Amino acid sequence: MTSTTDHPLHVKVDAVRDFLTPHLKSPLKAVVVLGSGLGALAENNQLTIQSRIPYGDIPHFPVSTVEGHAGELIIASLKGIEEPATIALMRGRFHYYEGYPMTDVVMPLQALRYCGAESVILSNAAGGMEPHFYPGALMWIDDQINLTGTSPLIGSNPDFLGPRFFDMTDVFCTKLKKLAMDYAEANSFNLYEGVYAGVTGPNYETPAEIGMLKGMGASAVGMSTVSEVMAARHAGMRIAAISCISNLAAGMQGKDLNHEEVMAMANNSTVGVRFQGLVIHMLRDMLG
Image (cartoon, rainbow, N blue to C red; front, side, top):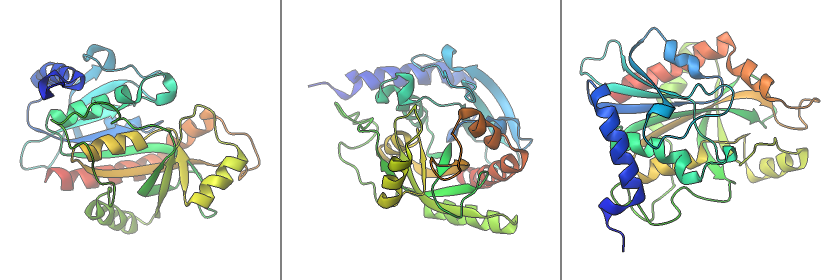
């Protein structure tokens, strides 16, 4: 039987922690995973950047291969916080469709948890399936449907991070949801809420598949996030997740889907201001 310290994941996260420790000037408290086109948060003037580290320099980190994922870990602090605390911004994530095993997709988040992070904000660009959604809308993820056909926790359990079996009820933090909803109301925009369906990609869904997903109760669909949520929940992290509705799903907008459209909407200045404001507002609660 493999001991905890001999677990393959333990070896990897130990190496990541040893590498990152010199870059952490204060305790690591939170992680933000920035999805397609949402990396501009790293330039927000409320953040003080301490280090920018290419993923390729970090032991065992995969490398982002998708446009809109810069592929760097940014170590930062938030201005106006009394107690020193560090934030790790993952400017780009890894996807199952890139050919990485699901265990590699979530390993960086697990490693950052092992480095001390207690909370995570996940973000993504998604196709909207609700009739009142529109490109540029933001959706708070209330629940998820994992349609990737696998789990990042298959195999021997990393007991040092979490239990073999773990609950997936009320995964997303209700306190952070209220903070986010209040922020949106105060700033005069709608923050919708709904269920996110995670699929493998890289192809977009067919209209028939969208009909099936809507019948399941999904509000938005994308090619990421669900595995990261499972890994974060397993490791006992406080979780928030936001989708940028970059387009309406297949069969709902009368034209073909493409990645350029996804990128253009995620990079929209109005969407960016709203998204960044939400994230900074939640980070203040996480670090305060």
